[in-house]
Image 1 (cartoon, helix red, strand yellow):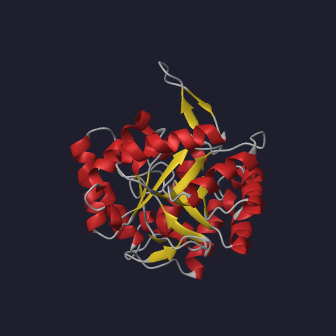
Image 2 (cartoon, rainbow, N blue to C red):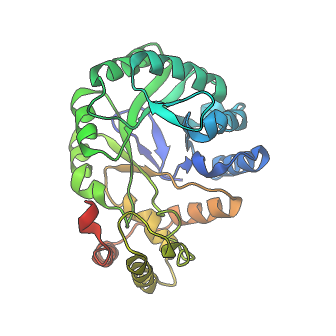
Image 3 (cartoon, rainbow, N blue to C red):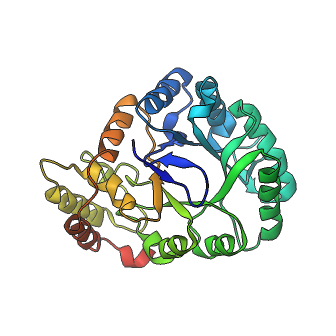
Length: 302
């Protein structure tokens, strides 16, 4: 699978990574999905200490323990679990980040993390202290590079201007084109990569996503989602499926290094990988997709 350089770093990630949040807690099945992804050319795995209360990191770590050098491993920090409760609090302090990374390393069965990401962020944080924590961990060799996972343009701008982030993870799809207006031009100028999560919009942007379009998504109405799905399906051809169109759409922007759809089954993974290996969208296809997405309420969630 093709790889792209992640920002100005020495990390070269497969254009499609595996978003591990969807793997579930059944270890044998999750491990099979991870191994299949690695065998088929994916080298980029993304998890977080928040997922399944740390169990996701444990499963990923166990699955890759004998092939750590083959994997670019990303995880996240900032959401602090409240003991005895199912909720969590936000903590971007230096002390917490330095404490949390030790637990992530233990669960992941590794002594370094390739990409450590702040899992959110607010303007009320002590951003300089947060950056200092990541920079210290990088100097110590605990992490190779760091980034931020956020949908907040104002927060992203602060980290672009003040830190050494190599990537921003953000939701980006045909149904959620906010990054085009708010952050992609900024990242392109700064040499920072976008990692696009949610490219299939919770399964709506797939060939069998009509039923999922019956649910609300962002501020689209059910009627708008159904109409948009039908319009996009009508534009598919014998050589390209809607899933292929959806996964290729974010990759059309040069600032996007990778997409990270999730997979809860081997079948989903294989379908996504086939779509990611399809030909890039042509200029005409991009124009048609963008025109179709205007039928939704894109202007309300820029």
